[in-house]
Image (cartoon, rainbow, N blue to C red):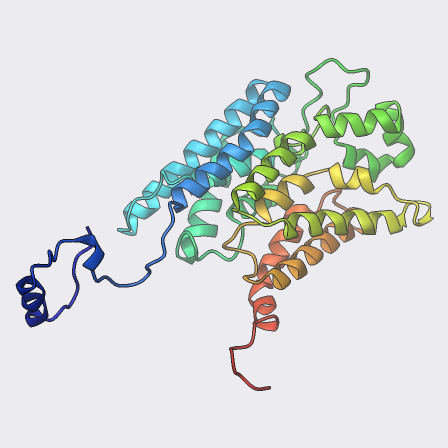
Length: 345
């Protein structure tokens, strides 16, 4: 039962004199909040891990033992760093609430499955200690920790980060390059030739039969995980739909052969867009508060992704687009701040 707070002793005596049990929950006086639910940080975080599990399991099946090692190393090292830094800061130990493990899992899903495990440990350290706890810990970080870890690894070991594992399953064409890499370096014609036809390319990308990071394989399983999060109410549909839609619309308009000659379906399924849109851009700590602000955030992230893919030297831009939009979230919140009730002007 909640404790009775600051109730006048004489009042308690009067209540007792009337024969009313002061221990009855109906007469408990407590501080706010009074509206509660059964959700908690731990429950939400582990549900997000569950939503990502099907895609992670498929990545292990598809890429084999290296993917399994990186997922284990990423999750365990992230939890270990969370425990150590909270111990050092003399904070409440919440290393097992699922948030640290989720950071490690997302990091492992956003890098090459062949990345050496020691690099995964370094990436987890940067994500947890530098990107998260240097800003105060969970709820205070302004950048997505997993993407900060990935960006740091990309700057430090660009060759290892862009060395992709060949197909493990039996398909007609074996390639060690990602679809976006083939498009960037050899053009759309070579991309279609690699898969055999447009239909085979779409099928491979939807089901997950392609090279790339562990988190850019099965579009189907990532969409199922994202739909689960929307169903549970942990994220809304605005951010992923608007971000993915922006990428599809702009890549269709600015195609390789002129206006309106692009392949939006390919770009919406390529790279880490689905993973980033559903599991990283929706991070409740690092996105705007209002729905209007979140739509602006998603449009900006989609626009930057397209700019990097079409005009930049790097074939993928989801990681950097989300980090850049994280940086302007305070400005977005300020611009779309709702007026106080009764305020003028």
